[in-house]
Length: 391
Image (cartoon, rainbow, N blue to C red):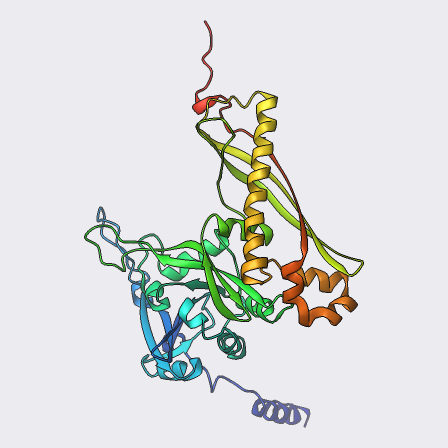
């Protein structure tokens, strides 16, 4: 009797098991690696870069010239909204599109003029999109950026992901973009991607994307593009300046020094004194000289101090120009000053947050920069010429 009861219990338990009745085989999936959003002729265009598995394992013959991998394909559809474009995009692909591996989102600046909120809502609401996918902007077509066949990487999606990890510009995820746009500063800064011109005789898509400047957004709308040196000042104040080499020139001296920062940190200290809002910005940096085209010898402590002073002044000048543009021209807080005031003075912030643009544009910003050269490279003499030994 116990055996019969056990068998009946097992049979009844199997009824509630879900099993694999709704499974989707891997062979039935179209894996999306990157997504692009454009806006043309008053319609939204959604582009997907899809992985081609049958070509992933193929290799070129020995001794042949490097060529684009060709392991991805591009599909584009348009609609009155990005959701409608997604629905039409699926009709152009014979497999179920899977967006869980999409690590890169590229938004054209023209599409950014229409507002980012629709795109952010879609990317965070649709269940398959990853909230940690990296977001880039482009003055070209997002479709063209994704269509590039990078000779070095398997796809342009991998190229963009690696550039984000190297922090060549800003590294912004979908979630961080949403928090920045909806946050107290109501602004965002995205790395601007362009198409590198191909080699002579090559197709225009046999190339790679590259970073040049920043795309600036206010109240979720694109407003301006900046390039070096203005972009360097913005990244410096936003505490995102990494992986860069900065030229520094001393007064009354021919040539210049090129310094690569080893450490770079920007600290913000908000103050409200007598109802006056102020911000103290302190920049501390340590760097290494990687090029010296002057006749100066860096073994001289006096010369080294002079270089420290010139480097500090140069960084301060870059930051001041970025502040003037943000405060006086655009009246937009790209440096998250508002976040610090909300954190340190919540009551005052709640009372004045509607007037933040005016407060920010008239705010007294005290900037202090301390930059030190801690390494002079493998050679300390001018022009990198090592000292000769004596017999």
